[in-house]
Length: 110
Image 1 (cartoon, helix red, strand yellow):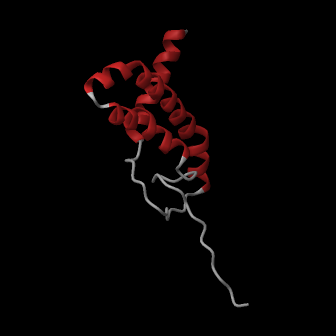
Image 2 (image 1 turned 45 degrees about the vertical axis):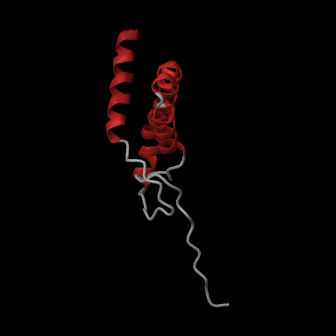
Image 3 (image 1 turned 90 degrees about the vertical axis):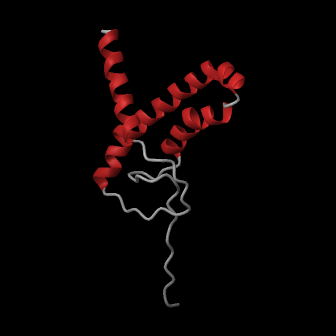
């Protein structure tokens, strides 16, 4: 039972890692995702990305002594923790680009 679950979770994490957008820190996101994209993001993508953040954090902590000896702690943190966390928590629901979606205010005639 545990072997099947770990294979499914491992496959899902691998598939999600292939779908990660590159970390582009844009100021304004100009996407208009559909309801289906938002639902898929909320139900499937965000939980998988959250899992990747947790696993990446555990791997980062486990590899921290080796990263410190090699002098690449910042690079390891960016790749294993910051990247997945940014993709999980800073991306608008249903959007594919990382960043916040600002609200557009249209001034009317007063």
